[in-house]
Image 1: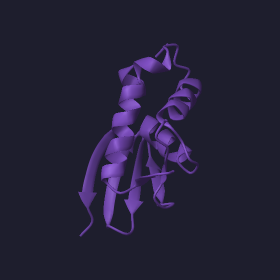
Image 2: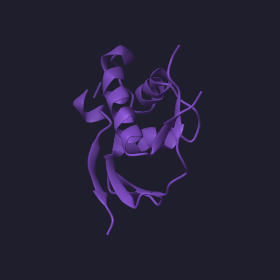
Image 3: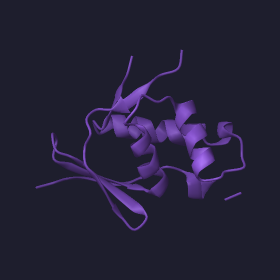
Amino acid sequence: MMTKFVKTKDYEASQFDDEWVILNTDQFTATKVNEVGGFCWGLLDNVQTVDSIAEEVKHHFKIVEDIESFKQDIEQFITELHHYGLVTYAG
Amino acid sequence: GQKTHNKPEVLSHQQIV
């Protein structure tokens, strides 16, 4: 069974050039992510799996490689967001 | 055909004081 993730809360995110800053107003933290990270953050409005995020990233950024090649990067990113309290497990 | 460029990354994480 694939692990599902979703935003802990709809924390505000602001874009500065190619970077995004996510403000956690519960823990008073600011997390800066790159452009791809900001795109992934936007997807997490809805419940996602690593595979579903990878598919969306592949489509949006027109990546020719198979998603298997970068799924691990996405999993690591989501795990980090979870560690910072921005993402929670969904079901 | 752009891998590193398309890797989602946390660039920094800090407490707001």
